[in-house]
Image (cartoon, rainbow, N blue to C red):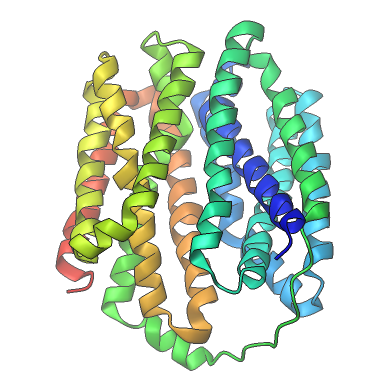
Length: 379
């Protein structure tokens, strides 16, 4: 495999997750600086998650239907850039809603198309894939830290310019990602897929993943605002986000050893238990930087190992031709539906209940997920 296509894919991953590194920590702060009420912030910070419920499946269907994955990827890259440009031009809730909704509709299309191309080019070599995907986490950390220092120096108003710069780079790499090798179509039996969904352990797994993502809704939408209210600066907030991502990278690297030593069920339950503790640390320990750092280190298990173990479960339950649909369902139910509902409902309740109460409630939801997993998942 030539290095140029792989460099293009690595660059794409870097830029795609660098966008996450800007949006997740700072988008809510930017909206707060525009004096939007909490319910509007909750909606605007959840739009990217809402699009993940249905957009990747729709774009994937279009790619398979037309057989023009490379062309659709380029359209997605350019569409994301064009529709995020209004962030520079307006501070109206309605216009921002339209811009972010349509822009993230295109943005959310790009990743699954590139993932499919990457695995085809690498012929399923998961080790080679991990080395490429690592650049996504590097992009997230670089964007989070860099933007934190830039915002402290120039103000939060610089954020839309940084977003456009990243989206422009992403559009460039979208044009450089190579076309996938030709592959035959797989015929799927709907009755067989429905039979998998009928299994109680599969439904329980998906519900637990929904609860875990729902519990993270307050974190992804309001963590930066909550921490800023405690008096922490922007660069320190960016550093706390980066600690979480570095912990995530570390646990991904250690997962082969962890899965050899511990059962998947044990790791799955441990991640949910840690989530319960983590959100309570954020709720009641925000005055201590040490406790906040410990809570961010817990991201290794509340996202890193949880996601890795869930992917293993999905691979096991949705075997053969059903794997792509199974993973799409997992993304839609958890990161899409769970994450967006968690963010929106947190926004609606933020001003009335306050951050500490809502993060404690997130811990309670994670505990509910733990109990359900203990009773029903892989029993």
